[in-house]
Amino acid sequence: MTLKWVLHWQPNAGSTVNSQILSEVSQCVESINGVKEGRWRATLTFYKPHTREQSMVAEFPRDFLGILLPEQPNKYYFIIRGQRIVLEADSSIQTLMEKLQSYKTRVALHFDGFQYQLGDFQLRVGKVVPTHSENLRGIVMEVEYVPISSVEKARQIMEEFLDIWQEAVSKRSLPGHFMHMEPNFAEYGLTDHYTSQHTAVQYATVMAQLIATVQAVQSVRN
Amino acid sequence: MECVVQGIIETQHVEALEILLQGLCGVHKERLRIHEICLKSGPNLGVVASEVRLLCDLEQPESTWTVRHIGGAMRGAGAEQISVLVRTMVESKVSKNALRLFYALGYKLDHELLRVGFTFHFQRGAQITVTVSSVNKMLKLHATDEAVPVTPGIQLVEVTAPASAENYSEVVAAVSSFCEYLAPLLHLSKPGISTGVVPTAAAAAASLMSDGGGTPL
Image (tube, rainbow over all chains, first blue to last red):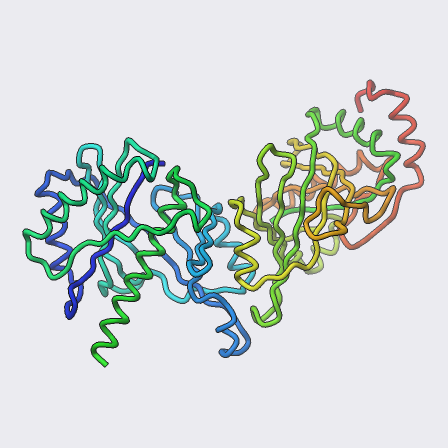
């Protein structure tokens, strides 16, 4: 499994994400000679517990989520971020969880967009939307460096690429920038050898950032 | 979905059963050593209680984990007439963290077992698995090296086959037909309906052992 960084768009204070920004970012990839290849989609589902009374919900994790990644169509990933737990399972685990009837979907989101080839890099730019809505909640970007699987060995080249990318984006004077927040993979029991479990953990981290951003905007408004 | 029947056999006759199965199945046995951890939902989780089993295969060089949920059995007059249990079953291979995940979700340890024995996997009208194992309990939490038999001198025999709503009748027929060959040594029936050991077992076993398994059935 080759290494990737998952970035999210951090709007400047007082601004929000919109489809114009998404369009500008996509054009930016093409302006640095990214070749458009096709569509991609990942799905993230937040679960909530079934309880007899609403008051009991607080006993159970609020951050239990499931992720379907396009590069692993037969797998499903569960994460409880607060406890640093990640689990890789066959996709039949979703049927199993439905049969248990202990947890149900609270909200599901798609990460949806186009992928691009750029030398040894593969880039994906995607909008974040709830599954039955077109309401743009965020923008994510995957930067994959194909030749290397080691988190540490790839660090320098990833940072160099990111510098080039950030400079290209900043020329468009957009109200925000891409951020990369690397989770502590070791806390999840993951090693230096990159796997799809690392990707799932990065998506969970990005999701936490997107939620924090939305909450910050709401508290300013209030 | 799966079709299931179970029976018991005295440990002294297991070797004869192995000879019989070897002749019937035409494949080699695989050793079995499975740590089965049964979890139940805690008191406030879910409108109804739920159970899930975590199976750790200790026979592999690096332990592999499976999560399994066994659901309700098929009901109705048709179901009662057949001698094989048809029930929903969903399983998934999982990475190592499954126990931590389910504890974090609010599941509690109900009991754990160690099954030690062998299995035969083969095709005979359906994909059939025969498992012969001693069921052992652990005296200390997760201590698989210190397990003792729940029923000394008796082993459990399970015959299972995956099925779907479209083909379960054929699978039931295949399993029933196969079980008839085992009748001299043990009686297989729906789980929960125990029939004990069969009176012909000793004689049948003696015959198989003296024969050395050379005579094809």
